[in-house]
Image 1 (cartoon, rainbow, N blue to C red):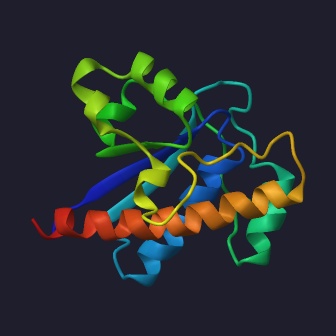
Image 2: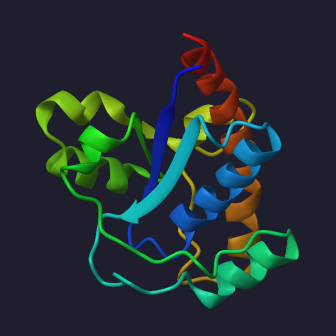
Image 3: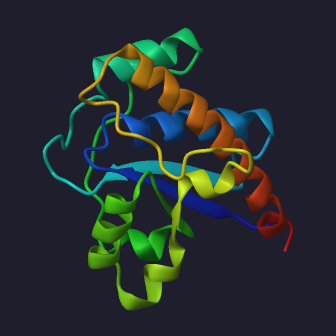
Amino acid sequence: MKKVSVCFVCLGNICRSPTAEAVMRRLVDEAGLSTHVSVDSAGTGDWHIGEAPDERAQRAAAKRGYDLAPLRARQIAAEDFGTFDLIVAMDDANVTALQQVAPSAGRDKIRLLMEFAPHAQERVVTDPYFGGDAGFEAVLDQCEAACSGLLSALRPRLAD
């Protein structure tokens, strides 16, 4: 069985991308694929490097059994395009920023997370940072749906 690596990316790596990382890790673990699928997250900006995820994201995640506390923000780097098979962005601004960092050969690795949520009405994962608790719950809903679809999409790659 092959290995696949995925990096989730948002703006600061303190809300959406660490949430997606935690959701995907659980799905991968539950599927018994943790030795075949590696998961990480990063931000396009450098404002929060080394910080834990936003407290509101941690609280919302904890209600569903996800632990974001050990995660720390980092900034995406050009080298990540050599390390990861997929770079999964939360929104169009992240895609644009990633295209500016990516070596030309790595641009085809960039995808939007919500592409993997087949029944979603939304195209992007909305940034909850300036909103209330409901926004963090919505991010979890989106990440759970899209990460489930992403894992399904990765399964054929693992079997190749």
